[in-house]
Length: 182
Image (tube, rainbow, N blue to C red; front, side, top):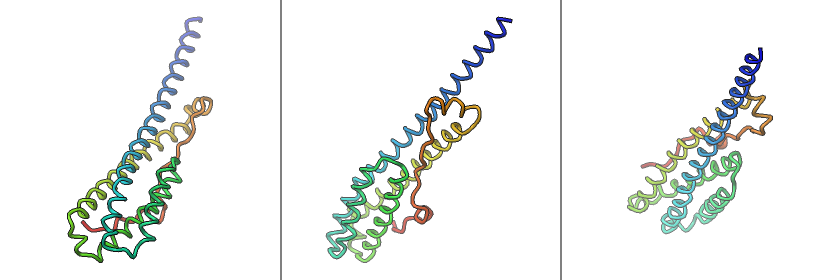
């Protein structure tokens, strides 16, 4: 009888350890995925001032757009919550589209090697951001499902595991594809 009780206690402890380890693994995936998003956003932030400078040389009439781009870029760098960052990044994407729309009015600018290189790099970064965002949101979904699922929720809540936020762009912007040409 003692052996059965000992086996049940050992099984219970083993089960608790497995659940805890899965929760830790999923939380670490979320943190790593968020780090990947930040790496891609930093690449984007580095390209924006270069792109603004190239376009500024052709169009001095768009100072408000250039100013808005700089403000949004700086704001996004200061925000660390996925929901707020997603809202700002959505606005930043609209302003970048506006910058490319200006470039459409200047054939010499569009044909310039520096502009084309920046445009291609930004397009690659945007694609990488999208991939990193999908991976992050998948990792968040897995963690949140585990936290909400029985029996894991019994351990997760007692040990302080919390739901993670999805990284979503503004709904009206999320489904729009970039408007710049390559």
